[in-house]
Image (cartoon, rainbow, N blue to C red):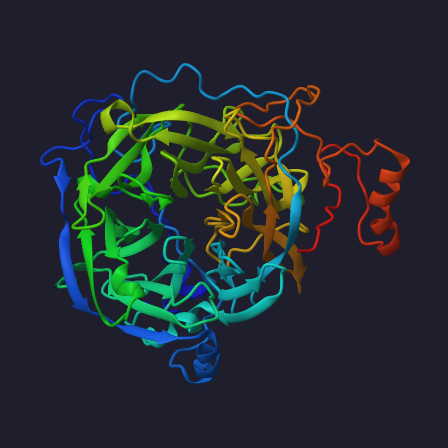
Length: 619
């Protein structure tokens, strides 16, 4: 599908899925923890495909040199379509999946006094809003950290940063993929939904982006950097997503990809929809890595899994660390269950098992899903928070970590996270720890999770409230406590945000990125979206990088803080940019006030809910 067909003028004619849409029916052998889901064979080897596909190798410098001569046009203002998943009644998740019983007795772990999450080591602005006329919503904020570089991949642009915050290269997302073809029906026509990670096994960056949007022009584009330096050449391939076994043409197109990697393979998932927007099934591509790393060429081999009762919707393959017994994928089952899928024999012909049920604390997933409030625009112009699909997963040291956002007991959207032992219950899996990151006033949404060598998990996400603009936040989960530290600010929003391009939906997200730094395997980077000051009266989004390092020792407990709804690992906190009291000393007050007094850029506000300016240390 080319950009002209998806320009904002045509958006009005393509509403999101409404009501009940035909969906995959997942049958339960037994509705309880540890039981397999589905009927028929319990494993599948998928279908092996060897095919010559569109392929190219080029560096960022070559991309920039070729950009003026590429076929294709500059995209108009675009809204990236978000196909909402069919929902069951009440608080259930994916349609036709029953609620398990019993509900967990303790829906979230109790909080204990703790300091704020670690202070930022440094932070800086990432890629920003393109000029009006070439704008895109949402940005789909994605990034990855390598040994010496940070790579950002958005619906608008591809960018490479030094770890000190210098932008080294930037090209449009379409130009990054353009050598695969930008004409109608070709892979790089209307690229969207980018994902990227750093493969610590091979020392390469791996990225996937969808193209074309609708069958018969739906593509999955895959790129692998030739070295750990993203400025060196990239190898790129395109797989026809709407073909079965790359032979049989279907009417189904790919949406909302997931990306994972282990020692042997790259794992890509997608939701498949027909031409009328009806949900069909989930699909998994398993691509062995050696052929992509050594003397890569146009002929590649992969394995496809697309049976409806095996793959599910919005299944997130894990970014796997270390030697793992399998590759794990996580998705919603119902409001009390996660689905855990295992792929064995990852060094040979992969074998996928039917998903098993993992009981979790019950959450709410109403339809329609509530939008997040923000300062300055009232209750009618909220930020779209999509639904409760799982957003990413990590496997490390025997645990699978996953996160998404849900509706909390107070009606606010909050972050939910899970640590799952996949070996428990004879391999069916069980939750080791879980929690909610919530606030009495602020809403939290679009989280991402990373895990370091010490089993410390970091989560970054967006947040806003009736007294705050939309900004970025983060926290960590220490293994000794199993709960989240109180939230720290990454970057405060600067203005109200409302931009729909006549779609009727104030899009935000659809995801974010949080990852361990491979140079030390201890510190974390997070990349989050925030609302920027408007340009010519038009709302603007921006992205912001931040680095933080958990201490190697547990900090001493702090005095209990004021009462508030902090349940599930998040205490009610004083909303200052530094996370400390203004009354510690006159010297501290002077230091804090000096920038505002000298520059006159902002005023401090002691009113409840207003955020003081955040001083961002340079990298």
